[in-house]
Every structure is written in structure tokens, then in C-alpha cells.
Amino acid sequence: MILKPVKQDLKVIGYYLGKIILGLAFTMAIPILAGLFFNEINPTLDFVVGMEISILVGFLLIKICHTEKDPNWMQGMIVVSLSWLFAMVLGAIPLYLSGHWKSFLDACFDSMSGFATTGLVLVQNLDHMSYTHNLWRHLIMFLGGQGIVVIALSFFMRGFSGAFKMYVGEGRDEKIMPNVIHTSRFIWLVSIVYLVLGTLALGITGIINGMKPVNSFFHGVCIFMAAFDTGGFSPQSQSILYYHSFIYEIITIIIIVLGALNFKLHYHLWVGNRKEIFKNIETTTFFITVTVIFFIVGLGLLRIGSYPSKFLLFRKGFYQLISAHTTAGFQTIYPQQFFSDWNPLALTGIIMAMALGGAVCSTTGGIKMLRIGIICKAIKEDVKKIIMPGQAVIVERMHHIKEVFLEDKVVRSALIITLFYIILYGLGALIGMFFGNPFLESLFESTSAAANIGLSCGITKPSMPIALKITYVIQMWAGRLEFMSVFTIFGVLYATIKGK
Image (cartoon, rainbow, N blue to C red; front, side):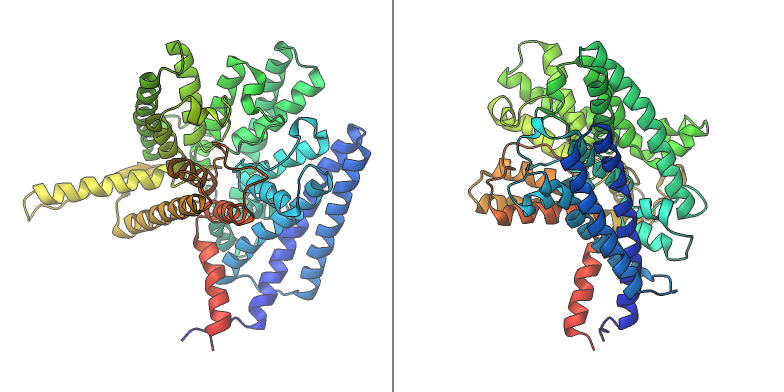
């Protein structure tokens, strides 16, 4: 028998949702301070309005739904899935007020793209956007990469027993420290240390390339936030191509690879266990898949002869590949060049890289390297069972921070999530084809949205159908949360209608 949600369920959900919204509201103080620094009065007022609305919504939910109970698994999952939707809407308010989006739906699209670290955009006249709004675009990507719930657990919530349920609901299932509060704070420590170092490297490089110091460091902090959180937003419409700098490209590759690593691996590197990076199943799987897919991409580009020198072929091909595989979404070519200068073989390689993604418990999207490694280990185990004598005991192990025996439930979980991603990629492609786009282009854009990449072949634009915009928003949301908290909210809606 399916039970309907009761009033207490709604109170717990509303109370913790209000706390998260309140935390999000206070982050709007950062663009307000930036607006005052750059003397941008109207943009500053846009964020004052957005902050006031967010505070009002948060306080109302906390007041109306006040409770002392901690969330259970169902409630925690619902809080997570709803918090991302509320963040999308509230985060879009100051963006829409800027006048750079044709509709509020377009602003919500970019807001979800930012929080989900996707990088697909519908913004217009980006090159003339205010510093204040541009900073917010990249800040929400930085916040979303660490996780909206992680922000709340780090700064705005006391320790409580339901914290882990919300932490897992955000697509993370590994604790680094003894509890998730300390884990969340460690994630922020890593991110802020790299933020300082990455901004310095990018800022100095920009100055060397001729940019004014203030502009250079502004671009540096924005590009770092998008790079480390594998998002793909940039202050200029040309993405990384705008800088025309090989050194800038190298620095961003280093940053996006750091962002694609498991935060648990970061912890072991920080405490001196550097050998872990060579033994870990995620990093070894990542190295193998990058090598194999780059061979496919390189072969495709060689056959078509788009780039006159091997160095240029490597520079263009490898950058798009590593950007796709880490789900960063930066481009050093124009979107249309994926189909004018690349052939289907090279493009298929990029789609494969986007679909696979980076590490679990990182800022990346996609299926994730741990799951790919587990599936490959399971296939190896089954092959051994077939060729070995019947009485032989086959035990497969993998190294992920420590030696772990491969269990059926782990394999099953990896296969289920992988299957859901493949279905999500396919459904988005079918909808794209319904609106008249070719198959390969539709699959490319769908995979980019669902795996939270941000690379585009030109389908994503303000004039695309509303239904396709909503499709990509749902894909970004479901892909970022890795399905379970999204399925929970639909399950609760079903129980509300059919339950007793």
C-alpha cells in the first residue's frame, strides 16, 4: 500500500528548503558588493531585489514550516530536488532584470545551466554585460559545482542526523571526513585555495597578453570558477577562443582536470599520499578513456584534414576532448565548426567523452569514471567465470582509496545509473529530432545538457522551441542530481494522488 505524504512531511521539507534558500539569498551579497565596487548602480539594484525576494521566501518557509525533526531519506531527497528548482528560479531574477534575456524562461535556463555546471546559454549580447551580472553567472556555477546543499551544510546549518541524506541526494555518496559537515567544509577549503592560485595564474597570464589588470583578474576569477567547477561559462561569447593564448589554454586544462578529480582523492593528495593518483581506479580509467577517445578524434580530424599542422590538430582536438571528458564545456572553436570542420567520427568521439564524464564526488557530470571502471571489472570477472574451471573461486578487486572487493550490489548500482544516463541522452536526442534537427546534432546537444557539459553545436539558442528549452532544463537538473532525488519527487507526487 502506498501512503500519502502527511502534514509533518511537508513541514520538514519546507523548513529545510527554507534554510537552503536563505543561504542562497545571502550569497547574492557578493554581486551586490561587486556592483558597488564597479559603480554599477542598476545591476546592484537587480541583486537587491533578488536578495529581498529570496530572503522573504526563505523566512516564510522557515516560519510556516518550523519543526525540530530531522529529515528522513524521502524528505531529504525532496528537499534537495526542490532546492535546485528554487535556486534556478530565484537565481534567474537578477539575470532577467538585466535585460540580456528575451524571457524569464531563458533566464531560468541559464540559471539552471549555471547551478548544474552545464554551460549552455541563451544570453544575448554577453560581451556587453555588466561586471555584476557576469560575476553572478560564474558564482552560481561555483556554488553549484560544490553543491547547493554543501553550501548550506558548510555555513548555514547545524549538525543534524539528516545531513547525510541530503548530501547523498545531491549526487554525492562518499564522505571524506568523519561527518558530512566536515566533508562539506573540506570541499570548500580545497575550492577556495585553488580559487586563489588559479585566479593569480590566469590573471597574470591575461596581463602578459595585454589585458588591463582589473579586467584580467576579473576574467581570471570568472574563468577559474567555471573551469574548476567544470561548467563552461565565460565572460565573453567566444569562450576560451577569446584569449587566443596557448598558455591560457594549458592553465585551464590543469584547472578543469583538478575539478574532475574526486574530492576524496584531493584529500589524500593534500595529506601526502600522492601514489593514490596512479593506483585509483577512477584516474586509471580516465587516462585510458582519454587516450582511446583522443585516438578516435585524432583519426577523424586527420581524415578530413581540417587543420594544416599536427600541432594545431592536437591543440584543437585535445582541448575539445579534455573539455568534453571533464564536462568543462570550454571551446576554442566556434560551435558551427563542429560540423563544418569536424567529421562524424571525430564528433562521435567528443559525444563519447561527454557521456562518460569525470570522477564521482567531484564537480563533473556524466556517467563517471568509477562506474565505468566497475562495469569493466564486472565484465572481466564474468569472462573469468566462463573460461575458468567450475570449482574456481573468482574474486575481483579494485583500488578506490583502498582495496575494495567487487560486490553485486555495487555493480548493479553502477549499471542502473549508467542505463538512466543513456536513456536520458537518447530521449533528449529524440526530442531534438522531433523539432527538425539531424540525429548527430541532436545527440550531441542532448548529451551536453544531460551530462552537464555545455559544448554546443549551435542548436541551443534563444529562438529554439520552448519545449526543447524545458527538455534541456530537465536534463540538466536530473543529470546533475543523478536521478534518485528527482525520482523521489515524482514518486511522492504519485503517492499524493494514488496513496491512502
